[in-house]
Length: 122
Image (tube, rainbow, N blue to C red):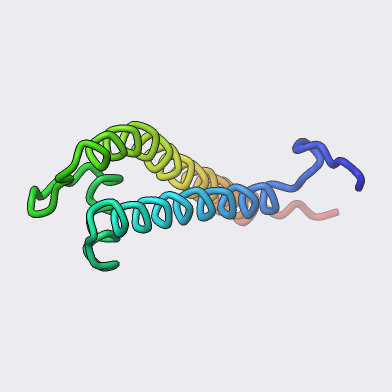
């Protein structure tokens, strides 16, 4: 397999690769958290998913909480790693969309400037 350096990849392809990595990371976190809480706490799949999302987004309603030492330890480690990955992913998403907006605005400004330039006869 031929190695392609990131500098040789177009910005659109790079953005798509980053989106795939972000979706995979967030999906993996949701899966690991949901499955773990389902078995550690004997919660339903819905409750486990809900608690995972609340933990990763730091909402913490308090209606569900870990009840054993094992699940509390898992929650502490999961929150430390998961919140960092989740917020980092959200930041990367925001960065992609900001760069996309900047490129669009730059392109629009360039088109406006070319329309505003007086036509010079040849």
